[in-house]
Length: 172
Image (cartoon, rainbow, N blue to C red; front, side, top):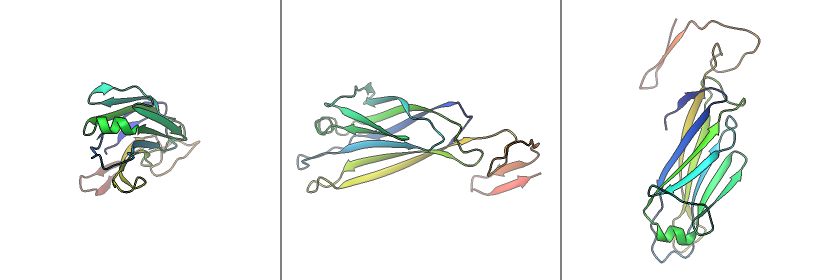
């Protein structure tokens, strides 16, 4: 995914778009989890909202549960809910605030979404996985590219061009 430019203290909104897999009755135990892991440059996720086919769904044992960890959260859908809603779109939105541990300049602050799902009707512990990563950049005024410097001020006098093919050119 494309990144955005933010400053420390800014709140960034994230969105994960996917769909609930459809399963046959041969599957005995279903898993469909959406996990998001934020780098240390973000505070914990807040305002987590789950929508299925455009309607907000309330957390609960009949729909899904949310488990949080250090820098992560997982939305785990219940077996019966997966069976009843196969093929429907799922959108998970949340916010996170950029903190003082944020990487500066071209050190990206990342969040990685992982979808984990049942993929074998004969093995309830076999799962498929899909990952997507988003990069968010925090640019420091008078910061040094590729690092940080304290106590000194530098006037930026270089223009850096990044072309679509990834070529980087420094123009003084």
